[in-house]
Image (cartoon, rainbow, N blue to C red; front, side, top):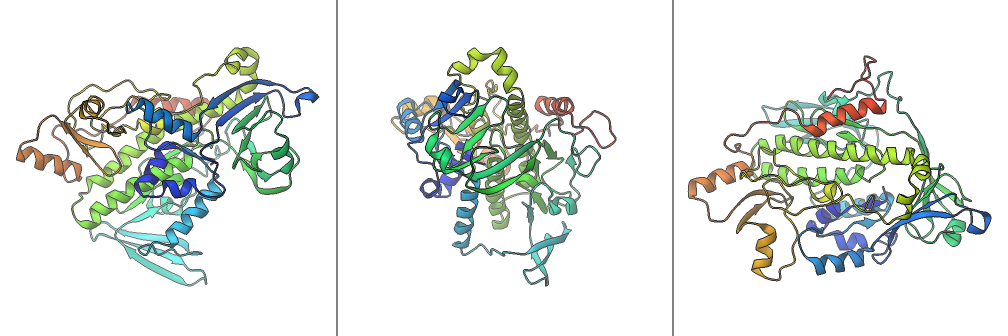
Length: 470
């Protein structure tokens, strides 16, 4: 991961961490542009390679200025930050180590758990750093232990398609990634400073820190930091929560997506934050069980949209050579494609959730590249700089809007509700009851499209049929 997107940055802002993160020594400066370049090769221009086209995305400073100028609710509250995942994870570990309520055990190995849904406990078993057996009892257990999650396996929550089948490695392509430092590349930069560079038919290179750290598999290399084979993997669990309701999943333990698009770690950040405020409500006693049920419903459907988008990114990489031959005019233009998936980052809609009070208003058209601000229940509340009541009222659409901790709208109206209605709204928002007439969604268009897409991509079910069951 080399990009913390606007949604993740907003969550870091709510935690008071966004500015500190941007100031990390190896984070890319807020004044640096996000430029991607298409080239015939990566030799110097005098040796015959040339630039086919490029797109430029403004720096964070420029984006912030444009956001203040337009101020129509369509911009994020925090703009994305370029920074290597290695830097992000080390920084977050330091943050955790300074929080008194966090007991961070390094070197402990999870070996299993037992769930007592009725008693309200989970017993988790570990081997500590010295190999001694340990047991920890808690109200909940969250598996954040990656795509091969032992917690997920012990909880009996299947991935689709399953791991361990004969078709596990049937993806139509594989990549080899090398994370490295190169003074030569940092000094030469034959096509100027870049975020991504795409040599036709030769993979791609990512500038990780705007200094001398890159991801690719050629150029003179000073030192290799990380390397390994990887292949596109599109998987999602049947549910983010166990049948007993005490074990939950987040991040790669719940979904696997390839790096293109940057939906992996960023989705994990949203998962973690979304669980945090729900656990707080449950532990403090005012939250009901539907808060955790709705976590699975809300995050799973949104992740399916991200998986579909990531699939498109992968296919664009695979088809780049053909794209250059047939559509060179697109590469030479400054298109919106690839600039920002604002629909995925900002337009997360939980209008199907049992913890949202619908108002009967029609949904706006969803577009992956553009975000149309709305306070329709289930939507993310738009960010507006206060400059006058009429301006804000036009964007927020109602006089009263109830927003939950993750910035999603639960209820809205133009007048104060009656006391009985207010109690009902609070009951729904806190997960103790569903809104009148609520029905759990059984399927949706994105899920059906995901099934067909995975089948076409070459992923098969465990019985060998060319199918993908969710």
